[in-house]
Structures are given as structure tokens and as C-alpha cells.
Image 1 (tube, rainbow, N blue to C red):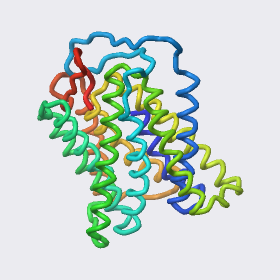
Image 2: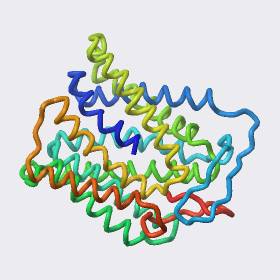
Image 3: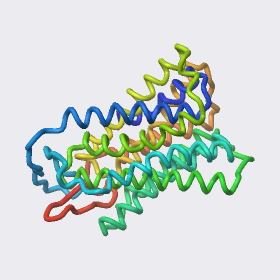
Length: 311
């Protein structure tokens, strides 16, 4: 939830930066990925063996103190998904509009995460999680669209937004599986986002980085890279140690709620009564998902020889 709250501040920071969205996203990912990679290198224990504490609950992932020896190639390959999500999201918004692109991309993420968790963990989603997630996605749609998202529904834009949601789910699942097998969460995030930073660097150079010479652009990028990317994903990775990834993906829908509230307080925006209803539905649904208990979480992944986290 703390990670989602930080993600929710990105839109307000982007307005302050006064830069085009694609180079801004590229700069954010390049800086955030570099910070995460540096943290992973500096914090990785030397000579420590991977250890997983046994757990009894099917909804709680194991705690880890490993050095990442069992990480595998998944997080390395997932770097492409991290970069691809950014490109798909902004391409979708450009083709089909901010409201529809945001609702489809962010709303489809938890759905795809639950489906991938089901395929990998071979256990169906719990009903309570499914109903709460559906309600949260509906609340997100009403909040972002104001109850009347019409026009601009470009089929290719929607397809790109759906692809973005699938890519997000893919790297979230990969991260959860690596963490569930004993790899330190900071190492996993460092590998994924460090690789994504390398991929997005040419995008930043091609689209232009002259706006970084202005104080507003530079300060906003520093905040976006260090806070909404590096710190947020460090928190998200630590959350995946004890929270099933399907549940975490649903809780991440708090992002548009935080963004809407910041728009009210900082930017002087207004919400329609219907949007307030969507915000209330979203908040209630997230509270249901966050409740403890075996019927709340999504499907579960079983790590080899142990009960692992949900990917």
C-alpha cells in the first residue's frame, strides 16, 4: 500500500516537471533502475546462503534472507517487460485517451496477475479475492472516468493497454516467484529495473533530455526516479515476501485513489459525485482485500519443497 501511495504521486510530479510523458517516463525508469541496481549491489550479502523460514498459512509467503543464488534468469528477462509496460502504457494513452488507457492498463493488471498466478500455482483464485478485485476495478473505472468514459476508444489503443497490463502482471509474477524461492527482494528489483534502465536509456536519448536542464524538470525527475520508482519498488518487493502477488496487485489499485486525492488538494481539481462513489467503492474493496484470512487472497504458488508466495 505504501508503494501504491508513492505511485499515486507520480502524476502530480509529472505535471510539475512540464515534460512530455514518454521522455519523462524514460528518465524516471533510467534513474530509478540505476538506483535499484546500485542498492542491490551494495546490499547483497556476501557468502550468505539462501534460507527460507517455514510457514503454515497458505496465504503468506516465506521470509527470506538469501543472497539470490536461486534467482534464475526470470528477473533478467523480466527487465524487458518492465520497459515494455512503460512504452505500451503511454502509447495506449496517446491513442485512446488518458481515462480509457489508464482504466484498461491499471485495471487489467490485477486480473492478469490472478490468472497467471492460477496458471503457475495451479490453484484457482479465492471467491472473496475475485469479487473484491472486480469491485476495485469497477471503482477505479468510475473514479478515472467520472462515470462516463466515452469516445476515443481506439481498438489498437485498448490492445496496447491490455498488453501493458499483461506485461505488468508478468514481471510481478516473476518477481514473486524469485522472492518465494529465497532471493532477496532488493536483488530481484535491482536486476529487473537495472536491466530496464539500460533498455530505456536509448529512448531517453532519442526523445530528448534537454528539459532536464531546467530545475523543475530535474527535481521532478529526481523525485520520480528515487521515490516513485526506486523506493516504491523496494517497498513492493518487501511486501511480496509476506503478501501473495495477486493480493498485492489488487492493493496497488490504491494508486489512482491517491492520485485523485492529490489532484484535489494540490492541483485544485474537482471530482464529480459519481467519481466520489467510485473512490468509495475502490476504498471499500481494497479494505476487503487487505483483511486477514484464508479466503481473501488470490491463488498460491508453491515453491519447490516449501509453500511459497503467490506469483
